[in-house]
Image 1 (cartoon, one colour):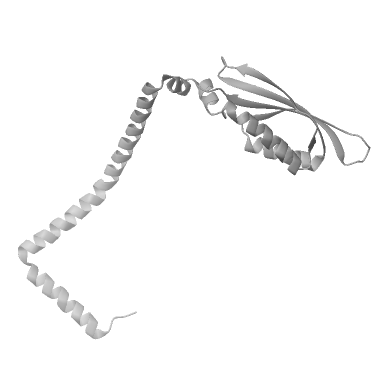
Image 2 (cartoon, rainbow, N blue to C red):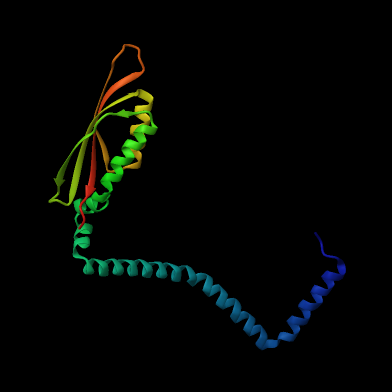
Length: 188
């Protein structure tokens, strides 16, 4: 879109007026402003990198301060095994996990008659392993969907054993035996 001739003439006149009314000191000021803008464009990325480095150092110092306040947390962060244990769900979450397992089984058409489980202390009583064993009656697609959902939603859960057999040749119903292991941490 082109400006009308009158608008172009007015812009030229205003620009000419500003240029002539600036004088030598005005032009020095404009030059200084342009020079400062150029230097700022050059220096700004360096300042940003420096600020990011300072932020990382502050985060590291905050972590060190927290470690000094709580030595057990500091030890867990230095030791990879204890770090792994600190990422496990708390032992207080086991009843909720068992309730979720049964609820999901009921919703997923998996029939569980009974569940046996044994607890075992690991890593100097820092963690507990709960071994669950139970028979299940279900068809294969529902069993697979149910197990996949459990393993996805509970990263500290492992499938230890899965055996299946059909009661009737060609039937869809399976008698399965499932063995799971759920890891949880004890409070520090």
